[in-house]
Image (cartoon, helix red, strand yellow):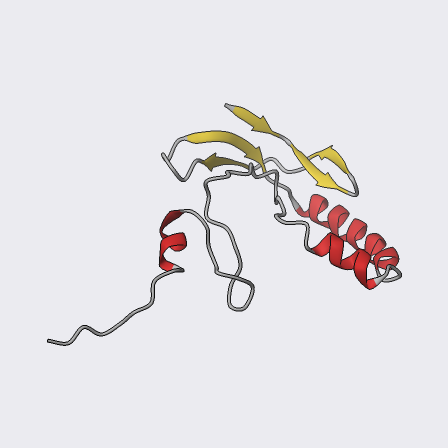
Length: 116
């Protein structure tokens, strides 16, 4: 089992100050695939500070540069592992909705009335 003890803050992986641990569960089979050390208040303050510094320079980029960054895909929080079989996708007007799982099938279904 993998142990994840770092947070990605300000462009680098740094050790978490947190002490609380959470199991990361594979949604397909319910098995623990990793043990993640969660961030604490200090980690949140460091991340917020880094985001504020980044936003100052981000605000001066072109529309295309911002678009390229914002369309990059998924974001990992607290070192969560990416499961390619997990449902993902947008809501409302951002596309079909969900891939994989029951959400993927339901996105293509439309309720209809069957009358006899």
